[in-house]
Image (cartoon, rainbow, N blue to C red):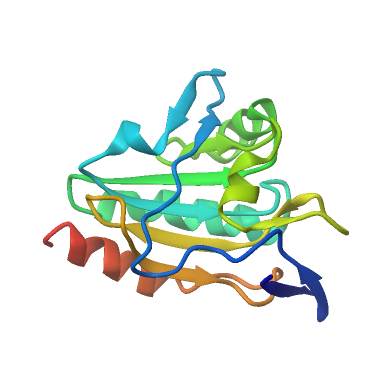
Length: 170
């Protein structure tokens, strides 16, 4: 099993996250209106999947705001998701407070299947997801993956955004 650190202390993940070249595991997650979203719903598009432990923490908020701001600079055919274990209601409240309307917020609050299937769930001490960023090509193959080694640090935005632009033909 993979691990990351939380304030310098090792924490174990639920498995081994998918890597570049792997087919992304499908998911069914919940939006703020309680509708379901699966990976197949955006088939044929380049997808950025930003995974955060909790939207109500400073680094997660910064990460989501940054990707939300960058969406306007991405070509057509790129969609962006933020996934967390926060309830859809907490995600909706955060989006309203922060004016973040471009990222599609997805909740893994029902059973944590996304976290388990993607090997990103941290049972102890968080009960949350590890910080990670994935960029999938139009066929759902992982073209970029960053499992942020220290949960309290931000990901490499530039590398993920550059990969998304490259895959979209920009």
